Length: 422
Image (cartoon, rainbow, N blue to C red; front, side, top):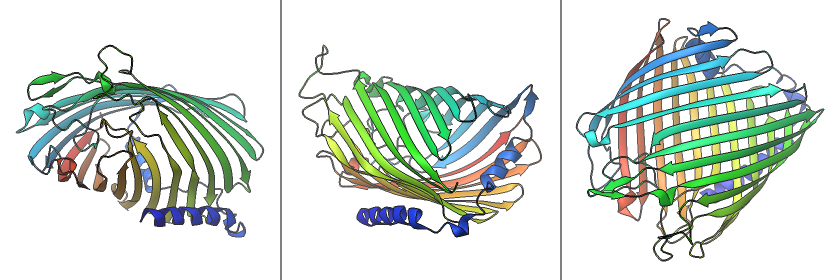
C-alpha cells in the first residue's frame, strides 16, 4: 500500500509540472473556502483596540469517552467536562502583522479524578515587510500540556497523565525578486517532561528531555504565477539532556537518542485549475545517532497535498507524508510513520459548518519493536447561534493494531459543547 502511495506521489510531481497552463489563467483570485467564511463569522464580535482585534472566548464541553486509558486490557469509560477560556489579539495592519494568544484548559473526569489535568500556554508571532521583496517573520510559543494516552510514545503505566513543557521559537526570512524566491528559517525547541507516578513510585523522566536546533533553506522559481518549483535543504541537531558520560547514565539500560540529521527535497506547487491546487515534495533524509545501540535512520522522504474546492460551500483535502516519530523504547531510534489523511469542510447553512477527516498510518519501528497501524476518524459540526454563542457537537474514533497488545486499543468519544464570545 505504501509503495502505491509513493507511486501516486511520483506521478503527481510529473502531473503538477506537466499540466497545461492555458486552462489556468483564471487562478489569480483567492478562493473563499468554508473555513474563511467561518473565521469571518467567529471574528464578527471581536473588539477593536486600535489596530488590533481582541477576541476573548470561553468554551465548555462535555465528552463521553469509552476508553479513557486507550487500552485493550484496561478499558475504562468516563464523562469529561472541559472549560477553556482563551484570548487572541490579531493585528489589522496593511503590510505587517503582530498576533498574540493565550489559553487555559481544565479537564474534570466524573469517575476517574486521577485523569484530571490542566493545560495552558501563550504564543506571539509577527511579520515585517522590509520592502516589497523582503519579509522577516518570527514566532514564540510556550505551553504546559498533557501527553495523550493515545500517543504511541506515552508512558502507559503512569497512574496520572504525564505533563511536559514545550517552548518553540522560530525566525524566518523570505525574498522574492521577479520569478525567483528564497527563504530561510532557524528554529529552537525545548521539551521537558515532569515526573511520572507508576505503582505509587515517582519516576524521573528527565531522560526524555531534549533540545532541538534546526535550520532550513529553500530556493525556487515561479512560472506564470501558477507553478512554483523549489529545492529545500534542512539540518537538525537534537540533544537529549540525559546522555552518555553523565552521572547515573547506564549504557546498558539507558539510551542516548541525541542525533544529527538532514533532509533534502525537491518540490512543486501547482494550481491545476481554478479550483484545484497541490504541493508535492520528494527527497531523502538521514539521522545519525550518538548511541551505538541505535541504528541510523535514512530513506525516502515525501509530502503531498491536494485541495479541491468542489463548490463555494465545500472543500476537500488529501495529504500524504512520511515522518520520524520520537520513541522512549530502548530498542528503537524512532518510529517511521507513513500517513494519509482525507478531509472535508462544508458550509451547510450560513451559520452551520461541518468538518470531517479520516486518517490511516503505517508505523514501522526502526529497531526491534513491533510495527503498528493507526486509524482515526473525526466529525464535527459548529452552529453559530446569534452573535455571541456557538454550539458544537462531534464524534471521534481512534484505534491502533499491533503485535504488541499492550499498545493496541480502540476508542470512541462523543462531545457536545458551547462557546461564548463575551
